[in-house]
Image (cartoon, rainbow, N blue to C red; front, side, top):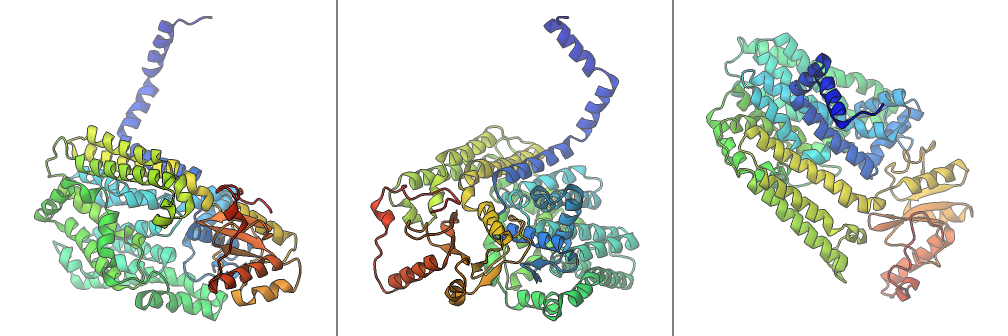
Amino acid sequence: MTITPDQAVARLRSFADREWALRLRAIIWSWRHELALVGTWLTLVLVALNTRPLLPIDETRYLSVAWEMWIRDSYLVPLLNGEPYSHKPPLLFWMIHAGWSLFGVQEWWGRMVAPLFGLASLFAARGLARSLWPLAPERARLVPWLLIGCLAWAVFTTVTMFDMLMVTFTVVAMLGMVQVWRGRAMRGWAIVAAGIGLGALAKGPVIAVYVLPVILLAPVWMRPAPASWVRYGIGALVAIAAGAFIGVAWALPAAEVGGYNYGRAILWGQTAGRIAEAFAHERPWWWYLPVLPALLFPWIVWPAAWRALPTALRNMDGGVRLALVWLLASFVVLSLISGKQPHYLLPLLPAVALVLAVGLERVPLGRWNSALPGLAVVALGFALAGFSYWLRNGVAAIEISGLPGYAANISPLFGLSVAAVGLVVVRYARSSAKLAVAGLALQSAAVVVLVHVLAFSQIAHAFDLRPISRYVASAQRSGRPISILGEYHGQFTFLGRMQRPLRIQPVDGALGWLQGDFRRVVVMTMPDIPDKWMLTEYVQPYRGRTLAVVNKDTYDAWLIIQRMQQNGVTIVRERDRRAPDANVRPPGQHE
């Protein structure tokens, strides 16, 4: 039977007017804010999963630790290349295992765990705002958008690291502190203990840097004060002890299983070393001063945010004081610790969002209030487009810039697309605080999506270690002796699903080891693609250099070239006589 267009429209209207359809529409409308937030987060994560590989060395290392724990049934002691891994506690790895037990060993699940905590932290921060200001629901709606609108947050919420876990458990502890303030001490201290304990299992005692200042400085922000400061102090001590017990309940058995050196590292060495003298990322005390404003883009260039800050201070209540103590005291403590990284500041961003939400509620916004952040993105986009054009067309541009050669693969279209996003924000700026914040948050999300789709996708081959990981794992399974030169951070272990540790060969002993058996090969990093006469077994571009699998003869030739260059001898290579692209081979192609 043929249906006319009018009949089709009538049927669609009848379908839409049914009672259950009306109820569904009402439910969707009532959850529109949550659905928009989840949709933005999901877009960021799915784009990242589908456009970039696991990033070495952090993401590859953490999934390799989870993989080794999984195949060796080592659920107490994290393992890396067969040895106890003392740098991180096991909670992230346990969460990965929980998914693997349901879905099988899948890379996508390993990469979803940390982003899921990022999503949880958004809703936890919204819940914290509701708990602080139950009569001001608009503030609670603004807070998660202020968080995901930070360009840095939108980036780190897609990455497999420990910081989103720390954000989540820090906010959980703050929720507990608000419960204590409201007079529900038993429940509040239990929540605080859970936040401290889970934070300790996520990243170690550093959770104390974010939570203890708020507990210890309660007289500064808790107004009205609790009925008894003595009872408050007892509750605080019990909560801190209970939280520490959760961490120690893992650490003591793990120390016994992992051995003396591992136990000493997790119980004292890692914490003391990072505070007094960083094992890595050692930076001066003032280093965070320029970093925090950069993490707050685009809000740092939004005039309304600058007007919101003094407005929040003039209307200061216990919630604002809590946020300021959380932000300022933790910032000072982090600045005094020698090891510093930008993402260590992420657990402080919810405090910034709380303060801004209070101020924005009272700040009048004009029609063009979003113009400056939008114009900043426009300028950034045109600068990126011009820089990309220069790299692609300048003869010596790559050498002058100091960037690796693959940077020229990024098209000026990427920068122009970023500029277009900024122009859209300028054109459709809104005077409502809620719509303005959401618009700028979507601007940040769109920029991160463009970074993945138009930029990182063009250089992903320089970071994708899957081909060489499969090659190394295949050599291991076939029984061929293979080792890696220098340091190894587990970058091949998960991607190759390796079953045995990879031998680490010191540089000064590599040639002797290769000479012991003609089948032996070593994985090494070279400055560029080897010449054709250097019989590498496998080569792959890697972050502007080359990963190569070489035998004794090739390694010996490489050492000779290095000694000649150190002595000032100019090496004229075969590639120098050919066309510029004649020597380029795809990843994994054999000589």
